[in-house]
Length: 220
Length: 97
Image (tube, rainbow over all chains, first blue to last red; front, side, top):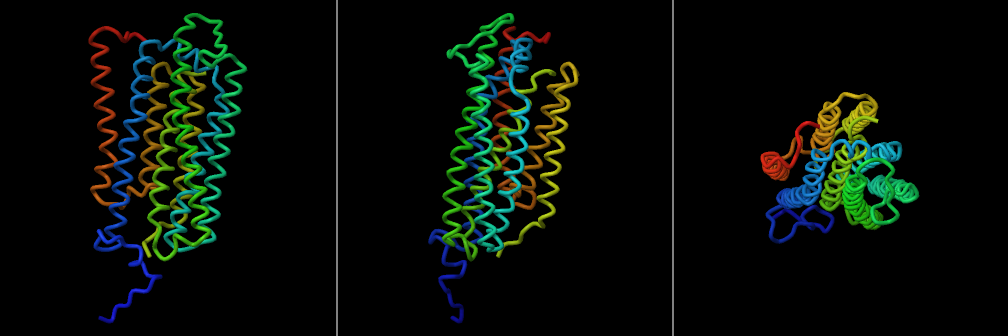
């Protein structure tokens, strides 16, 4: 045989259970998409609860939603959308074997994730000061305080679960930045970056739904 | 090396997403009655599809990935529609809002 397999070739990264690198990539992507389908159902329970209570107590949900800070929520949507752009470019850089660009883009994605979390922290603190946190000094001047509190339970559960996902994503991005800097994703070994990208984009999609459903119930 | 998408595709995708965000945000200040919810949901679904197609490379990927991507959404729709149907038929969810 005249084919030589050097450690630098793509074949070096193929697990023994796979025929070739193409099959290995397809398996990794399929596995990630199946995981994301389970994540849809994980968040889906909260979206179901939201749907039922929104239709049951629609009027009070509109009132409660108006107290949330739409400027921070909207800015955070833009931050996540731009972080997704950086992530898409990171996957591209990994495929093109551009190590320096990959390190920068992964770090940039992590930084934008941190910006999102910081704004979220400022917002949660503002909610606390405004007496909007259930069981922690919650005060409601208008009618039906019980169901207004219910809206904020749902708001904190949904944004909280999302924030946990963003935090996990930031951790993944930081580890990947380090590994990329060490040159672990060169010569076609970019599966990890690609499926981490799928996770990051999914977390972005969840926020795309949370923003209008929580901040813009009815009109302002 | 795998084939990659032109950078301008990603930039255009991001611009489209930011424009859709501006649409959602500004609609939030206009009273459209029940259509506030419908427009907001329609724009969110459009954004999710754009992200999945271009950022997550569903466009140009294999059929089995399309199936995996759609499966979760279909189960979610089944869960929400059957549960809502139950609540509404018992009269627990008023429909006059």
